[in-house]
Amino acid sequence: MVSAAAPPQPPATATDAPLPRRGIERLDLMLLCAEALDLNGAEATLILSEQLGFQELIPNRVELWKRRCHNPLRRQVRRGILATADSDALIRILCTQCERLYPLLRALLSAAEPEPIARQRWELFEERLAGLVRERMNPRRGGVQRLLDGAEGAQQRRQLILAMALAAGNGGFARLKASLMDAGA
Amino acid sequence: MKQTLRFDQISCRLQVEGLPDVSTGQSGDVLGIITGWSLQWAGRPELEGRKEHLLALMQAVLPYARLLVSGAGRPLTSPGQEVDIAPAAGGGHQLLLRSSQPGTEPLTVVLDDAELSDLVRVLDQLRLDSRLLLTLDIPDDRPLRGREVSHRIPRRQRLAAPAAAVLALAVTTAASLFWPTPKPPAPAGQGLTQTDKLNAPR
Image (cartoon, rainbow over all chains, first blue to last red; front, side, top):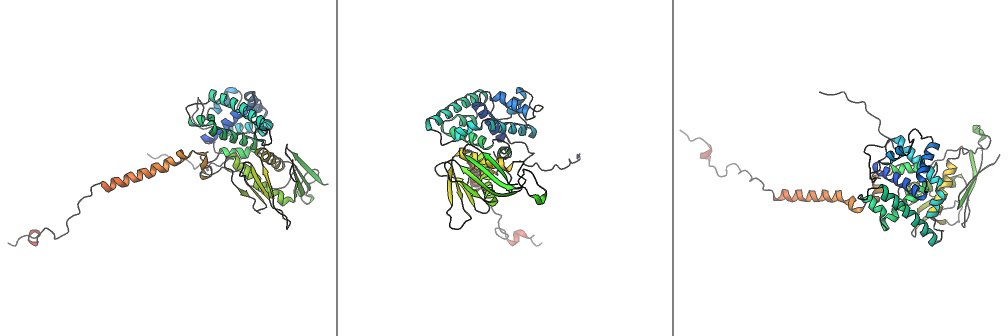
């Protein structure tokens, strides 16, 4: 028996396609970096969500956590696809977080800072990030082990901070979204 | 009627001067024609130029920033070759600016990550400013293809699939060489006499 063929769907474009798993992984890690930079980062994320008009999508901490659990590196992973509206909301929130945290991001990236002060800043950030990663991520995953690794992880952590600095503000949204949509990202 | 837009960051200040394009009905504090711009950097020479030079700077720096977000920074040149930007050998980013005036040597500026992000922010602020009523020909941000981000995947993981394919091909080829082939059928007439083949005359 042959069923009626479904009408052809238009191909998904870069703007309406869902984020690949690696893109969600990077997005969640950047949100985690924002929390490591700001002790009230989780609260700030919720407040920003409300300010940006995403209260219906992300009304509370549990809904935020459920969306972030699409990250395959998490201890509790949700299967399925993260809806484009949800991922766009998280990217907007992250870009606004980056704008707010830009002075801290800039201080971490600046080569003009005295070496001991720069090192102290990085140590403080890395210590907080490692604590959050151990608390929320699955330590058996290679990606988590690489992130916590001394040399290899340092490069990855700097790359995350640079990406956040370049994604700060309204101008950063399209840049960051395109990056999270990279093939094999 | 002359309007000035100014965008400040910690290490740089971009100032754009222009006029509203009255031929298209613009008025007030908008800017439809850019007459000049200047970029002041802390501790570096000030840059000045026309609209084309500003556009060239944006056409090189913004796509480069897009690549850096993906961790795939590589040398880029503006379409008119006025501006080059590339990762610097000792870290940071090297910006090469070629003057349109004859006899002027190109200017090389090395920026650290923080200075580059400041520059990207002032350029973003300019292109997204609601007072700038001018279409700027800047390429859209697009996702990178697989080979452009292949360096992100560890080499062992990247080579695993091709190596397995080569191994499978080698095993299949070797097995097919050792497989016993059926004996070829004897050619006609060999081993049989004419008498065997034909019925004996009665």
